[in-house]
Length: 296
Image (cartoon, rainbow, N blue to C red):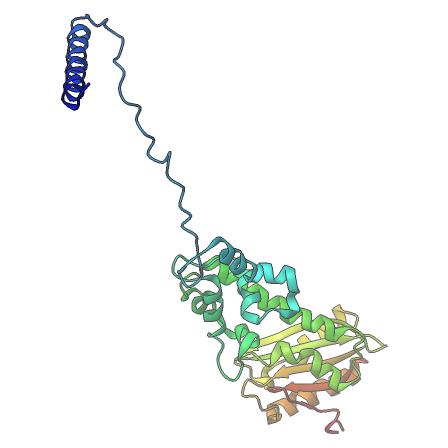
């Protein structure tokens, strides 16, 4: 068989195959289709079937996307996790505040909110001590701090002060002017107004109770020895101490301070309830009438 014959046979075979396919199409077209039976269509591809799910990653505090590994590393450094890993003593004041606040806002991370809270403290009372003087309105001026969080923060500062006082009270002997000043120092030195306190003491020098006699714009000459000793009698006090603060920070006694002290001391001697001391609290300073030998 020569090459020409071979080519003609291939062409003939191809033509026969084409004619056969055409006949098959015509034959299938003539078959009536039953109603209700859908014709086979191409199998639709699932949209996400062949695609791998992309991992968008987590956002860091700065807003940048992180890989899963970096996200875990970042989460481990958040205040709560750091507390569990390293203990509270290894956290900054801002991190501890962030744990108390728990959440921030969409645009303000909780650490940033805590930093703004700390920024409200005014000189010279900076840091946590300065938060004692911050008002609820000032706290709520920060985006992310509502009334609930503001009350929570003010409760925290009050608890801190009371814990400090409770610790100072352990083994405290109120016959010592220095110990009396240490006990009342944190409670009174931050106040913007004058506050007069009465400490009722038993025979062993242990405090029975403390009473607030007055607060605000105090005129010491108007405080009556009568109300002082009524409180002392109610508490069954053997001895008493007067303690008040000077918001200016200077504990030097005024003339009114000295007059009140003399009146209370004389009344106490007649009633059998001795005035042990009158301590004036300034800013990390104090003056004791007993230490200064101003008692006659």
